[in-house]
Image (cartoon, rainbow, N blue to C red; front, side, top):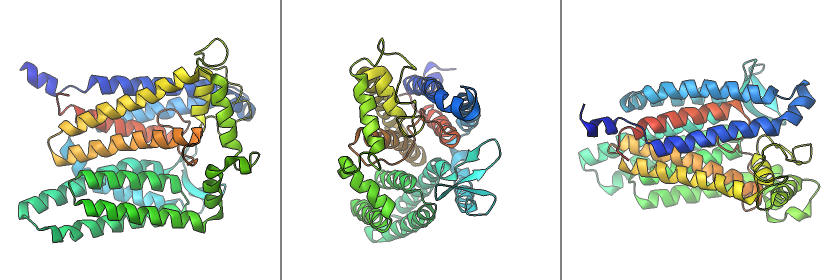
Length: 380
């Protein structure tokens, strides 16, 4: 086999290495962060760890399956995966099958674990949009359509986003809606569509989200708390306050002997959601500015290498899909970390590869399997 052909079929090892470090670091962080809550609820310290580990293994298996699929197969499967996912989003409203927690209907009960269909939407939507956009762009080029034909792309896109908006608002799951919308707009723009389309979509999307925030008191309260967390430090501002205390306690090298896992004090009932939304605060407390900064650098490396791979892909479907997957992980990490340190509103989104939760870790492994699969098509 020619040497250049062999390289062409290998994954991007830098991207693979970054993903592996994030995954291993993430499962170690869940193991040390979750044991107080696990001991309190289940009588032994490792319930959450083993549950997360089993979901991770399941995700790796599914990710490997998607890793082996050809991009042409992914493209053919994309509408079936998306519309199946869309149907599952509606099943959460079915009594006994759907599970409601704290006023939200986002989960399906499968006994051993609760499945959150909206998490899988991040992958299925990216696949569907990549296939749809690539097909439309290729069609326009083949027919040499004028700019006025762009409405035939814009209107179906807006309809798709509108359907997702309606379903996710009913659940409600505003955070996932924002992430999916950002992924969609980024993919739409980078597909080579007219700039005014993206500006119109972005403007309409921001307006719709602001209206949804304005109409729901709890969303409005979360937004005003972001603007002035000291107005309610023991109520709505409590999570942000404790997060900042945790990160500040870590100083440069972390509490204790420095860069040490498991020494957090905030996870013992002080910090809300230490294993999920707030896990970055635990990392900052235990590993200090150095450890937290290293994690941010790893996500930046992931973005750099992922976008480099996407830029070198030749066919439109693969390039748009890779861009969407990299944008998803990068923006979600930014959204989570930004909320915890107080520069963005708290969104309740998991930190990719780190937060406890079966649905999101499975989805991320599938997404990374696809991304590494696509990286084999270039000699990055």
